[in-house]
Image (cartoon, rainbow, N blue to C red):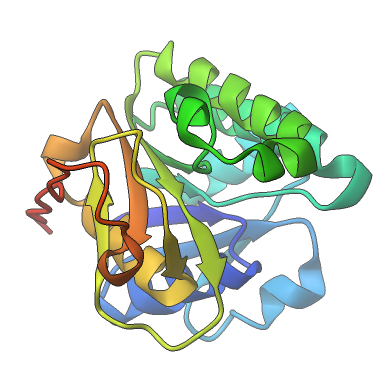
Length: 223
């Protein structure tokens, strides 16, 4: 598979680049920091893109000619809402303009219909960012693309456990290692049944006993 990854220089993005390349896929790392992008030059192609500039994003997508796009972007500080909404919307629009049908967007638990099950502490801390991510989800869902949205729980930097799982259930909450999340994202990208789904991602070992009846989404990669 030929994939462009936005947010490739981030902590989750680096796992995605490395794991995608290890699968034998052709990976392109897209971002706006040339120095950080060039660190990946040995295993991935690079494409400069300013996520606040829709034309720049479209140019990056066009230059890579990918079969699929993964967005794992996220802002920090004052620019968080701008990147999470405007950046993701630019990626969705670029996919449409460039004829790339398959798009996977990484969002967050507590967005959309999962907000009803989030803690008040999380809402108080990053409510506006979650709102921006939700609007970006809505923009992608309203498109004619073959989209998948993955909402991870709390992200950790520890070693992978191999216990990461996706759930087609907004009630799910827990934590997940970034390396395990990357594996799930790539498997979901290659699983046709994930198209048109909003999936939660957590480590099985952090999943609380309640609510009952939660079953993991089956990933059946085709490439």
